[in-house]
Length: 328
Image (cartoon, rainbow, N blue to C red; front, top):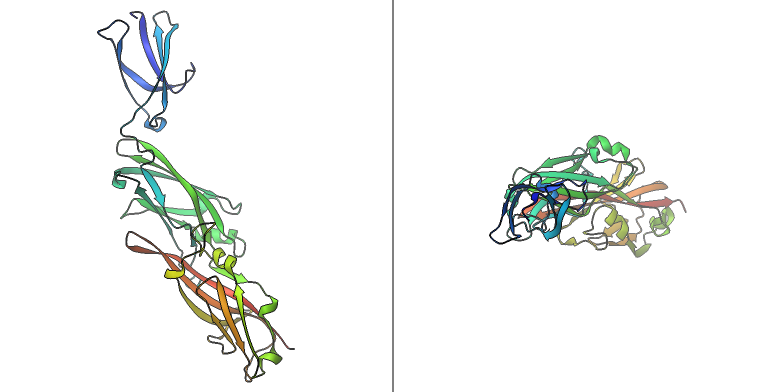
């Protein structure tokens, strides 16, 4: 044991592997064969709690004398002490106030007794699954009044998107605390939804003007547009529906194919909805002044995401039902 000249602490027993900890003191113990070793870490990003450390003791001749392994205990580790909280989906722009871009909030919160105020640095990685946008097409801003950040689509990037295209984005955040410890936080990410979603033309939303001008004509039916409202962002997770308790909804009116408002409260078409299905009643109107063609019955949906007693704008979108009018 007196022949020991140095000891290395590594992540693996490979000779080429860099040191995980730097030995600062090596002294013979009171009993034969016992040594007291002190070491320090120079890069805490390479250290995680409960990882295996390989000890390699070298003789004065340079040959490996002893190899052993131990489990590293780090009382300052922040692994599993923080998590991300954010809405699963949000619109990326307001459909009515078109210059208003929506920022998705992401909070770093503690899972136990940890304090988010101890976090000194955050590195955010975004991984869009859409080939049309890249990570640099997002604006990431650190919050001033909380531990977290916001993510917003760069307005210049909207032109890269196809009509009504959603942006699926993976999220990984590496946090560093005041003691230099790091932890990687990741989850399923989020979806940024388009401001306008259209329900395509269908037989049930196709009417003849001859019927609509008949005062005795009446038709009641239901339209299921579940997937379209999810596409608009009204979903909590990929496999779940949305809680409509915090949604506000209003009818904007009937628009022509050029986007011009024809009637803000059309009498012949009565639409009611606060869920994924809409009850529609069509009634004859002998003085109806419409031409054959394609129209859009537009409704506005608004929803916020609440965190820490504060509401954050989430959805400000329009749902357009395509209404087709024929002469006969």
